[in-house]
Amino acid sequence: MIATENDAYQESFNQFQTEQSATAPAWLTELRQAAMTRFTELGIPTKRIEDWRFTNVKSLAAKPYQNVQSISLASGDAEELLQRAKLDDSFHRLVFVNGHYVSQWSTQHELPEGVVIENLASSIRENSGDLQERLSLETSDEAAAFIALNTAFVNDGALIDIPEGVVLDRPIHLIFLSVESGQTVCHPRNLIRLGKGSRAAVIESYLGREGEGYFTNAITQIELDKSADLDHHKLQHEQTDSLHVASTHIDQKDSSEFRSHYFSFGSLMARNEINCMLDGGEIVATLNGLYMPTGEQLMDCRTRIDHAKPNCNTYELYKGILDDHAKGVFNGKIFVHQDAQKTDAKQSNQALLLSDDAVVNTKPQLEIYADDVKCTHGATIGELDENALYYLRSRGVSKDLARKMLIFAFANDVVQGVEIPAVRQHLETILLSSHGLPDV
Image (cartoon, rainbow, N blue to C red; front, side, top):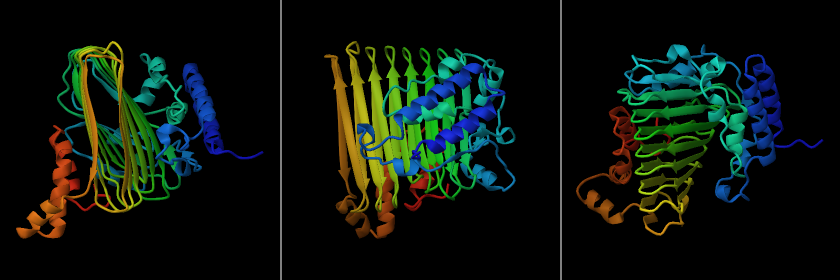
């Protein structure tokens, strides 16, 4: 019998199902099995699929990764990474190591009545709420193999519920650390829901130790009720031999506001997808991103915004800074449905190439089925301005410092969109450092 690329995942899944069978509810066992069957049907995406044409993930994703069923914190590696990941001790914090919740490193300050900030595995054990419906994420798309894979192994992550009318005064920081030796994989699933008129800020941080390379396959699902407001940040600092595949799915109702701030610095190959469904009127969504690959890194950023109802505004700005032999991919699609009159959508992707060997593929897209809309998109790719460099050099600024000043200026408008001081200061420190993977 010829071995296939999915055999390692199937073997790991069989072991996982056996170990989980005693405690998992029947609906979850069935959900996982259906998702694994779907992953087996789809297989690891290849470049023949249009959405993966510039990202050859197969060479990394087909490795025999092992699912980590338990963790040990004795080595100190995880605690060292945790200290690097922390931003502010005043934040609510949930910490996960190799996909498993670590209660002793997690912190919850006093919470308003009805607010839930806990780990998903606990909610599954208690069989609370409507988890079956929420975890059944659609995987019909041929490019959605990793969504199916995440669902097959779904077990832990963050569950955040903010009830109607609550304004959370502290950000929630979700920290995901990978520390096991060998080729391991984890599948975090985060569920975030804000009730009518509520407001919160959430930060996701991903870090890992150097080693043989690991795989993070993460999904975040966000539901915003009417007039809810969410500030969402993602800081991807994975180690340089790792694979990071992630998707964020946002469902917005009337008059809600969503702001996404995505920053990608680590991983040998990183792919991040954001899918926004504007299912109501008077919605505002802002997607900002900055990706900075160096060496042989590849960073793939993909966004899709569905304007389903009238009178909604979206603003999107993604910037890339690429050095050495790095590769970047940006694909941003704005889909305006027939009923979405009075749509106002703006999209911009800008890339700065610091090396003749760096490559970026950019594809902004508009698909419009309404006739009363204002939609713009654009993409620019360029190098550092030689006139600006000359100006700074002529005033006594060294060449290295002049380059850093121009790079900082290029990226700074994305960074300045971050309103949480601790996050913004963290990003400014990275921008002022060298262009290798920063010590965060």
